Length: 105
Image 1 (tube, one colour):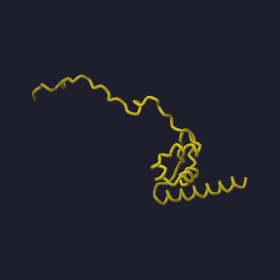
Image 2: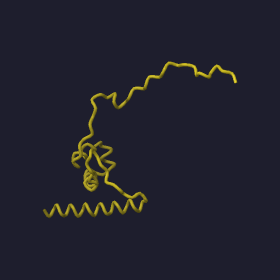
Image 3: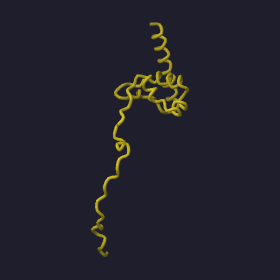
């Protein structure tokens, strides 16, 4: 129980510092981001990324799925159909001359 209270105090201190940082930067933190209908625990995200070596390392080693697992957020859905990520170009209508193309002024 004591550890839970300590974590809560750390989380509250982190959120206070984060809010102050964004306020000073001129972009106040108005809402906590929501992913999949669940508020993102920014403190847990911060500590998880730090434990894995920081943002640069997590990006370089492509460990964001591990971060999602550790922060208890659902993994993004992957589509089996790869064409969903690369939509085909829409068919263009048959080339027709503009209705006023041949009119003289």
